[in-house]
Length: 255
Ligand code: MG
Image (cartoon, rainbow, N blue to C red; front, side, top):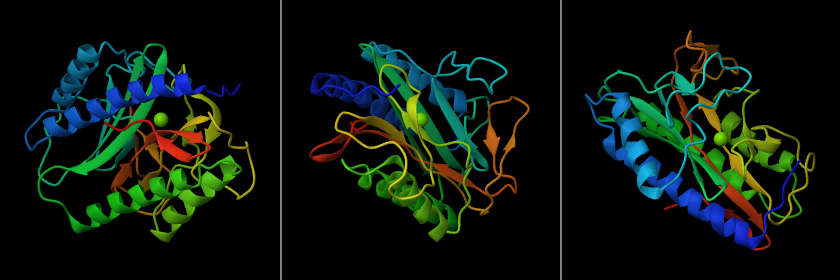
């Protein structure tokens, strides 16, 4: 079922989204060469506690997962694409880090992700992150009244292919609201004019996941959570929660 949100609900989701942005900023601030991934999770937990917000990630157990997720953020490094569990790994110079975060506040949820480089960037990683941002921007720009879900997927997918990157075709964005994952599914590829119609008050998480190696397959770690590129190439993942409005797409997960 798809819930169309009132303006008051969108305002409440904006507040949850602000907490998500604060969590991502804190995790990014904590990330440095030599720092353990668990320190990023600790920084994220502090922000959630300070805001009085809950975590939709902690304890989350979708059908594919063997164990409840043990942290409030996903931290995926280098060839890890999404769903990385923050552990004792110490960040190294040049690591490409993707952090995915959520927050629950007053019954509403936000979900967003960033990719960034720790220390000295490799030019190809800068290009990969830029392509991922362009894919997200294109997807958001297509989230207008009168368009359909397929228009978003088409816009995202065109940028991914133009960048000669791969993507996991069975993961994508999603409706979001009272819960983190709601209908409709928002694939990162699609046919223009097809799929669920976009209406004012529809809220979506749009999240391109790009793999530099260009293949559309992935491998799963023994932890059952972490998805990696099949060729050890690097990956990036950037996400926002947005609302479709009469005035155009409105990003909810900003500071
Ligand atoms: Mg999401």
